[in-house]
Amino acid sequence: MNTTKQENRLLKVIPVMLAFFAMGFVDMAGIATNYVKADFDLPDRVANIFPSMVFFWFLIFSVPTGMLMNKIGRRKTVLLSLVVTAVALVVPVINYSFVSMLISFSLLGIGNTLMQVSINPLLSNIVKGDKLASSFTLGQFVKAIASFIAPIIAAWAAATLGDWKLLFPIFMVVAILATLWLGATQIKEEDTGGKTSTFLQCFALLGDKTILLSFLGIMCHVGIDVGVNVTAPKILIERLGMTLADAGFATSVYFLFRTIGSFTGAFVLARYSAKRFFAISVVLMILSMAGLFIFNDLTLIYISIALVGLGNSNIFPIILSKAMLYLPEKKNEVSGLMIMGLFGGTVFPILMGMLSDAMASQTGALVVLAAGVSYLIFLSLRLKEG
Figure 1 (tube, rainbow, N blue to C red):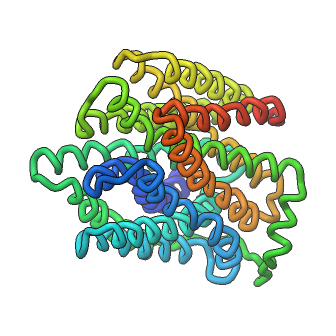
Figure 2 (cartoon, helix red, strand yellow):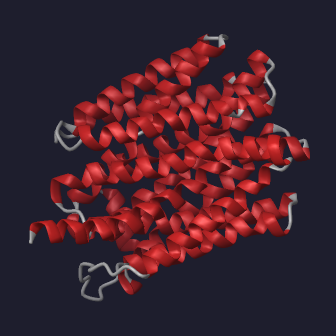
């Protein structure tokens, strides 16, 4: 009987994990921004609008999505997110221009907002209790695989087929497959009793110190994530004179080690203290920032990028799981608020673009990233044991 239950649970987890993979498509924003910048000859402050457009929608739609889940359910919300993601990926195939890419990135952000808010609560309907943080981390591991291969596919498509944009239709096929598979999977969800929280009730949760600190922590985590994604190739181009095609692999290095970190974290978090693991992660990020400020050697820069990938890989699931377990009766609302923190992916690139242009150096971008790491140092000291 137990074996049958485990098999049924696995059959439900697999399509959810494929949706996590589709969630990773949002991270193509980093490498795509570098290609769009080159294609249209844009300055940093303009080019960085593209990843900012992706994450801007987390501010607008996160809380409404939490409310929507109470009405239509978590699985249907994830399905809606996959449909929007597929549409976002078809836009550059139909037309490639500055405006069409803004539309594509915006739809990608809207779809990702819907997915980020709903997929973790949906997973909590399948996986229970103290295994939740490690399950979230497993999802982040699967997501990181998509993030890791995006720059590789783009570089391969550009070098072999002469068009980096073939990345979009390839990922679109996966999004459609995820939609069909999850659509055919039945998942029993918790009954919300038909109650839907108002905007004020959702935002009132930020009045709780634990929820507020968690929200700001996610803002910094995502800001660092998007910031490194966009800036790593620029650092190599600036300091070592590399071409974009070669420098783009810096993004893959980041996501490779974020993938390794997520995979490792899925096992470590199932057995050891999340607080201690969080602190170790932050130490790795401190070392990384120091290296990115100091080094001009390719190998040492790659090591620094790898360290921030490892360090940043488990910050999100630790913060999110602790926030959701802190207020278990408000999972949908807390998830919406926490995902709204992904708006940090809009704030950081804008500040980084402005400061790097002002300083005529990517050192300006690194200053903003270092500020985000500084907050995570503070948060690691405030995190409760568990």
